Image 1 (cartoon, rainbow, N blue to C red):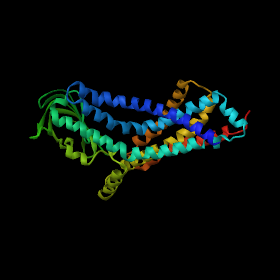
Image 2: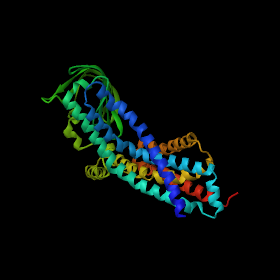
Image 3: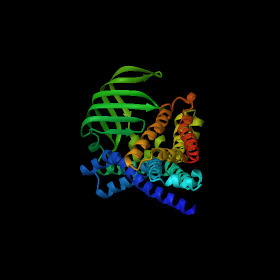
Image 4: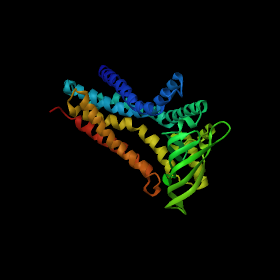
Length: 361
């Protein structure tokens, strides 16, 4: 039995390393193309700074790649073993499938603990550190050089300008989100930045702005001859309070206590806390589902296992997206929705595994 366990662990770990590496690269690629390579190509950042940025993005990608990699590894390894007749030989020898795969389930529990560490601490901290690197580029090269054609995040407010000349902007879009609701959506043909002595944005003034504004908690169309807002949230000292999606689990707990004392909405913070925890358990559910589905596939081909993995991921993330989209609806308890895929995958996976552990036919 020990030899069998070591063989299964060796096969699973080897495949896991490859799949995690592939998925990490794929997840990194989008962020690299969006946030890193454009800075390098335009000469706004040095090569070492770009390398540092990529390293800071890896933990964020790993938090997603580990569960995906474990699911794909389970499908590929047990599909290959089934196709080669090794599972049939194992069952003919009187060895229980459940006892044979126990080390693989144990590996998924270890990975779940590792994912919890990444989700609750490492990934959010790395994401904030990555933004700090971006601010270093802004400080070194000047803010106005990065305005045109980019979406800039000023905390709850997002700005886009089609063109920029110094501090003058043209064709500007501004929208603001508060407590998960978009309460400001403006377009203006022109606007101007006011910068402080260090070259950091201090305020933004739009001229002849039109769009949707919030008035007495109602969203109404409006026209503003001149509209000014403060933009100091982009300064590095504002990183002391990151957005909820970029907070560690401990910071979210502190934010929840602060909001409870101030009477602010608690549901968005609860959703973030439960998302970090619930997604950490995805490794266990994916493993329990992946093993019996791999046995049923009876295939050696990698593309079949990857296709099944993608379908299962779509089903899992549908619940995650639903829970996050309802984060402002406290009456629906959206933080509990985030646990439904774990409950579903673990229950169905356990049932399929026990069913597959019957006598050979």
